[in-house]
Amino acid sequence: MIDEGLKNELAKQGVFVTSVQELYNWGRSNSVWPLSFGLACCAIEMMAASMARFDISRFGSEVFRPSPRQADLMIVAGTVTKKMAPQVVRLYNQMPEPKYVIAMGACAISGGPFKQGYNVLKGIDRFLPVDIHIPGCPPRPEALLHALITLQEKIAGQPLTGPERPRHLNAAVSGEYPVPEFGPHDLQPPRNDGLWKPLPLVRPT
Amino acid sequence: MKSLETLQAELTAALACSLELVPNPAVPAQSSLRIRSDQALALAHFLRDTPDWQFDFCSNVTGIDWPDRTEKIKVKRLVDGVEKEVEETRTVPGFLEVVYHLYSIARQDGPLILRQRTANRDTDTTVTSLTPVWRSCEFQEREVFDLFGVRFDGHPDLRRILMWDGFVDFPMRKDYVEPDDYEYEPTPHDEVLERAQRHYPAGEAAA
Image (cartoon, rainbow over all chains, first blue to last red; front, side, top):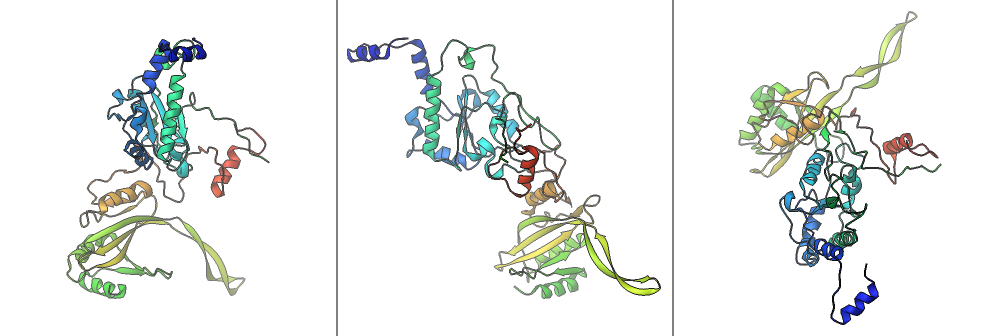
């Protein structure tokens, strides 16, 4: 790795020095194309973020793709019902690597006001690996932009070699997750236990 | 709108049907007419097509679950040769009810509230569909079928609408037991608190 101070000094002299990793991550972190896909009221805020006032294209993400085959980012914007959950997982499986997930809003991260109901998933992270969670009901477009910037920082910080390298550079890791089936009372399985590992909770006495 | 009593008398005279007036003593005072399922279709056509009424729009269809309940009644019994008044409990069988809210756009009138009841809650849960009369009933009757399990005779496309096809329960019934999948909730209360206590015993890590 090149020394940061030396790099700045060289840049002042008109010499631009970079590494393949930085260039590669700079390219892909500034062209994150989301899947145009909304589930509930959060999707309205997502649309607002893509319009001129908030202008998500400042961050290279204005190209909402109608096909999962062309998308890099899934913004789960809204309530995921149990009836919709298999389709959401299937869409994720159809996206090519590298792919990322932003869970937007209270419903997508935890079930929100419908958490203890019979037909709402208690968060999409039961079935998908979520990179960024945004709280809010619904979150402001600024919050979505903040999540996008956080995701860009995460992508820019990913090493291209070693055990921490992203999934698309690691042939041993699969980017597909099992699609839950409709059971007689609930989804089968109700959560992906290999993925969803909540911290043990203790109720105070 | 003319009073429900007028309507009841008129309908009884015109169609020779039996109607029960279900009063609502609460503040909204929206009383309703309970109709019999075998007469429902003729009555609905009459309400829609008679120039005096012209109920051309069904705005709302909903369901109510009335579970079995016990009530105390006083009966006279011979106790030790003496006739006494004894309190006894008896079980009133439950039923499902479907409620329709009708409006007349032509006469700027409404709502007229109709009710249909099923015979019981498990074996005979059929009522007559009013979708052939008011198209707007179609999805709402499907929803009542989905969430309460009321079967609508004459409905063109009776399948589940909110839950998936393989789902077997009826979530809006009072005796519905939801999957036991409680997860952390910052401010549990009532039933949710009971579930929280069951899943997260105080002072112990969750299983």
